Image 1 (cartoon, rainbow, N blue to C red):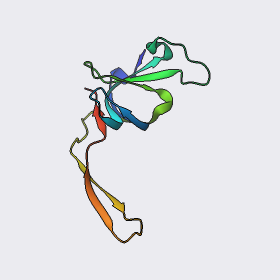
Image 2: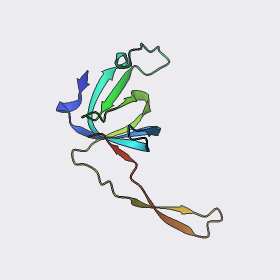
Image 3: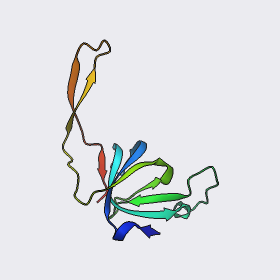
Image 4: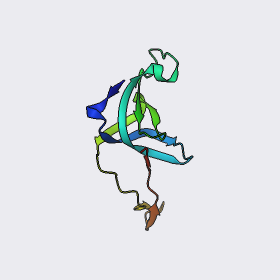
Length: 110
């Protein structure tokens, strides 16, 4: 198991939506990161699969992410803002911009 720089916290974005232990869907995880081999799940993967995983979080809130699903890992010691943020979309005819509040898409694994 490799722990990154003494267990520093990272904001890790994923390739796809995932379900967290609380049952909600997210696109990113914040917490301490450890890199582990494929043996963590008790199976040995082949050359067509990922061969490493990131364990993100602590205190029973950990999420295990396959290395091939990680898009970005940003060192982020301070907990990111978890308030809803404003997003927008265009109508199909581009006549109007619709603004709406979007809930936080980060799972806080600590």
